[in-house]
Image (tube, rainbow over all chains, first blue to last red; front, top):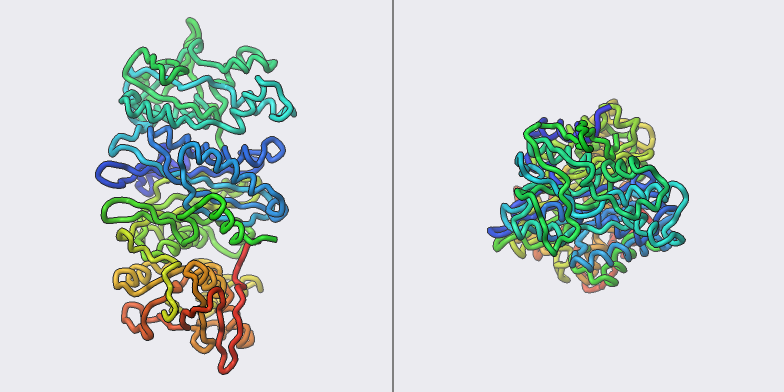
Length: 318
Length: 318
């Protein structure tokens, strides 16, 4: 069965779509500024489960996923639209009021204005489409396609937390009655923090040559970035920054690593830069994990003396 | 139960949202131009039924509803995003390819570029969120709020066709094997034509003082326009332009009128203008249906010597 990525690539070539395929589309705004826009669909029982989250967390996450796409361009969020469909039994509760509470709490933090959207009824499940609009200095948006062989590969923070949170939720743990460590992981999954400040810092200081947010998972997202840049990559197992809280879950070390590499939704930024060491006080958690190679389309993973090929095992819908 | 309109009005006041409530949000673009943006959610078995339509018609309609919102501002469409979620059994068919065929055929007509969106899996039903972006001369977008007492009220075309089409579909008629007359009505319902050219003409010639597209139905949409303008309205039964094809359906004259007044999705434009007669070759079907009054919040309907109050009976989700 074709994946959604194959389908989108096919659409791009069939209809000559030049602006599709990055975290946001970049459109001209005025002489100094470009507009960036993005849309993210969240579907009940595919992307979230009502018994795992709270309406406030879900409202937060709906906006956060789009802000994360804007962060991945190095842009500043400005406005948003929200389309939401709920079944009648949910409409009759306080769900939607609490959902918007969560949405607006995050929106206020980044000064994002709700300018439109749609409210609709659905037969059974909740669906949310989150649309974000942002601004970036003209021609400066950080694309997926700018990585060059020799560039170093970095991530802005520890990985695997969202996968850990998912595992906890699947095994019956809930945010409200969990320990501090487990709450940290569940929060990574249910209430992700968009890396707007890091994205803007990387752009303003001319550091990142290419960037993508870690939504599908490091292995998939690095493949996306490499494909867009026409390069390959080599990453080092011992450099992958695993969220320490993960050790609180009873899983083998190999599985923890797999969760950090293939687990999605950490919403950290993955970027490349033309320098070996990146030590900036503003980005304390930045970690170099490998380098870009000329080995087009191949991602190698180095574990001691072993080098193997890293398949793209992140989240896919189809 | 509160309606979605009450909910949105409450949201506007609770969070001080100044840009919500028109067909599109108007955002500054540059010194000469404003950006308009809109989003419309279409949900299977609420807004469409797969056994009533074709994938191509549905793709057309998904874009058309957003283009209609852009038309209602007097703006020109420029770009669009599309979020679509489908269940796996639909993904495996040619549905999505044919859906995009229909979408792109309409997009080409108005030179609209697809710049982004999302493709997702759903548990069971198809959901579509259509996002449109357009441009309009700075400060010139035609809002719902500009109607003044004494203005005349016009519609750009005949009404009731989409309601007739819906009735035909509900009683088992399908586009492919219907007569010319019935096809016309079914097409109004499944493959609406956005009134972009009329909207732009009304703006460029400084004719319209307020405008809205007829999506929920004349009675609802006129209420929306009056509420935004802080005015009332009086319309005349004998001036409501009923689509002639409606007489092909075996319904009483009263019911035909009700379909024209309360039936949604005709996607004609409803606008006000500061002139009694509007006869322009470019808008051959424009019809004056009444006038704006000072009777805030009340819409009167005149039938011979009888004047009654017109309730808002158009489509609502809740």
